[in-house]
Picture (cartoon, rainbow, N blue to C red):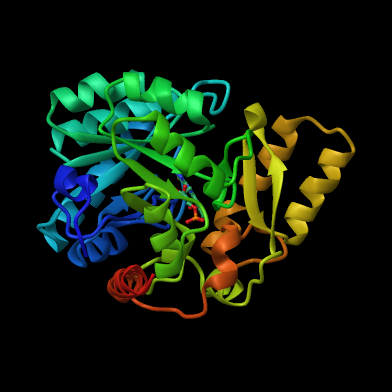
Amino acid sequence: MKKTRLCDLLGIDYPVIQAPMNLITGAELASAVSNAGGLGVIGPNAGAREETNDVVETGERLRQQIRKTKSLTNKTFGVNLMCASTDLRPDSKPFSDQCTKVVVEEGVPVAVLAGDEPERYVKQLKGAGIKVLHRALPVNVEIAKRAEQSGIDAFIAVGFEGGGHTGFHRVPTFVLVPQVVDALQIPVIAGGGIVNGRSMAAALALGAEGVYIGTGFIVATECPAHQNVKWAIISASDTSTTTIAGLGGIVLRALKTPLIERCIQMEANGNATEEITKLYRSGYRKGMLEGDRERGTFIFGAGAGSIQELKSAGEIVKNIIEETEQILQTL
Ligand SMILES: Cc1cc2nc3c(=O)[nH]c(=O)nc-3n(C[C@H](O)[C@H](O)[C@H](O)COP(=O)(O)O)c2cc1C
């Protein structure tokens, strides 16, 4: 496949980025994606079964995952760092500061900054020779233009279809990506609902120079998400996921499970978003790692309806690239 500017920037063969996902994107998955020619990204609390409230321990856990990834691949990989303001994630800054310090100390090649304050870490990371990709949350064209000014290397635009938290502007991928591409000079990476070669070819046609895939990698053999979550993705339809507004108006997309239905009811009753956010967050580990569909949350995107098989991460990358090439030749 023809390389894009993103491939040259990151030194990767294929512009496929495995999106980071809390607790379920560790060294095994990230290294498998990088070994297949894409960019694997270590997510928050990677390799852990539980989050910790200890800032230093969070940083040391990350350091172990970075070292493990280095032992499993000699290719480029990334680490997700949160740059959320206190409106969106109160108390998260000390954790992000510590993880950024570890990323610099360990000489990680790429950082994926997610949130609404990229300027907080860009200078520090770039000064250490680290490439910075920024996933804006929330996202729209104006936010993308401002982010470009902060000195990031590439911008990740995730549409409303995406799994997990998406922006309160609720702009779908097909609408967001071409408009962001027109507004920026730097490479744009498209995310949200991209699961196969058809959606990757569409993203490239919209002007994106790479794709950002979360839900599509939950079904990877190397992803520690519970089998119940993987099977829920395989059996999902186009209408299986729903959205609810969380803290700061940020929207969560997830499978309609009983806990999420309760959140929707709370929303209708006018309960505070703090309360709703606390409830859905309480179900994350229970759902994603323990597979408890009754009391947990199964977080994934609307693209799940197009995913039919469990595969290794390497096969996922290979199949997407082969299908994309085939489509681009046929069109
Ligand atoms: C289960 C789950 C957990 C997520 N956790 C994080 C996270 O910790 N940090 C982050 O920046 N994005 C997180 N995301 C968002 C993804 O990185 C990405 O934006 C999204 O999955 C892309 O859309 P897709 O799921 O349609 O591929 C999460 C998404 C999912 C599905």
